[in-house]
Amino acid sequence: MTFSQFQLHPNLLRGVEALGFADPTPIQNDAIPPAMAGKDVLACAMTGSGKTAAFGLPILHHLLDRPRGATRALIVTPTRELAAQIVEHLEELAAHTKITCAAVFGGVGAGPQERAFRAGVDIIVATPGRLLDHFQHPYARLEQLEFLVLDEADRMLDMGFLPDIRRVLAHIPKKRQTLFFSATLPEPIVGLSREMLHMPVRINIERKSQPAVGVRQSIYPVSEDLKPHLLLELLRGGAVLSAIVFTRTKHRANRLSEFLDQHGVDAVRIHGNRSQVQRTEALKGLKEGRTKVLVATDIAQRGIDIEGLTHVINFDVPHLPEDYIHRVGRTARAGALGDAFTFVSPEEEGDLRAIERAVARKLPRVKVEGFDYSKRPEERFEIPIAERIAQIRKRKAEERARAFEKAERRAKAETEAKALAAEKAAKKAKDEANARALAAEKAERRARAGAEGAGRPAAPGGARPRHRGRRR
Image 1 (cartoon, one colour):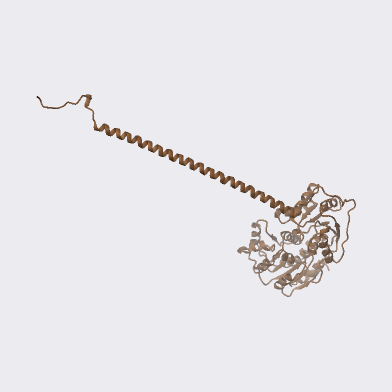
Image 2: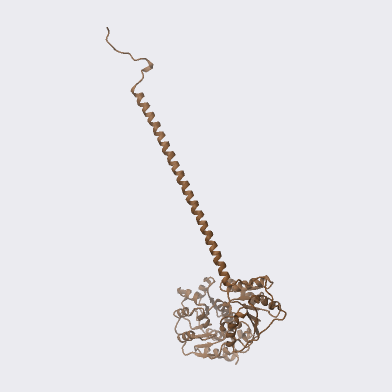
């Protein structure tokens, strides 16, 4: 089947042709016809299978016949990166139309998003949390909404978003077409789909989650302390043109990025503690070829579509087979070829066995020729977590001791200052009392002297007083 057989609007076919799409992918073949017919769809679709076009093209086609000025399609995704990616892809498909899209997610200013709601953009692609924030305001009423897409539903379950999804449903019309996409269908997702969908067309429900056919998977056994050096060896070999390197934790992502920079490999990192601006810039650098290596935690395992990405490298083995499948799905997208290397230390063999059971085959082991597997690095790549915790506790205890000593010194100084102030006040009071007593004594002497003088008045001119008597 070809895209023209879907009876899509000619302007959309121009967008498809400009993107270089030749034949529809299986999910597009299965999902576009029922979506074009207005039916609800429940699709179990692998990441990298072309599902954005599978739900995007039917919606874009129908929107071309709708009046402008009101939001008629809402696409809900679990992450900012996936939301931004979907908007970018829809804008490419709709490049020859006047259809407008906007991304709504946290970590950036809400002002432009509010203006998008008020302007009535045709399609809003949003994460649940920020969408619910906007729903608290009257400008975000989506009363004319006709299409709802829930993408990466199982990822939303993993991230605890299902209660938010149910709250979102309370804010939108019940009469609508709903397209529901998920890489896996655990029971809670099946239950949610029953609440949201009306007589849906079910697609790929029985298909087992597997990496794309074009992914060449291989295992690199290596001790934990040699992983950074093995990665450096592979990156310097020239075969790795662009790569996403997945680590287990944010701390390891930071340490690995710093290690690569110190050894002359330009690397950027993306994880939950990075700002949205930093995350966007990191992805942009990899897409444009300015950066060779992106070090990431599982925040980037879905929704990041980097054309021509040659390698995915699992620096740490993921604990869940599903995470492994989603990680390696970043390469070999849309029928291309790609390589997925997984570094496995002896401690991670158990997780590897679970992955091999999930993909139903034993993955080939690879030893890098010329790499010294027996060497011991002079510096540790990462301090063990127990040691880091002990260091943190020691540092905090020292900080508390210093704070206690400082408080004691401050209290002692305050006590001494109060005692000195009291001593000064007492001396001042005593001096003032003595001064008053002296002044009173002087006043009393003056008063006495005055009283004595008043009892013996002197004769005028200093003459002696004449005594009167009888003449004799």
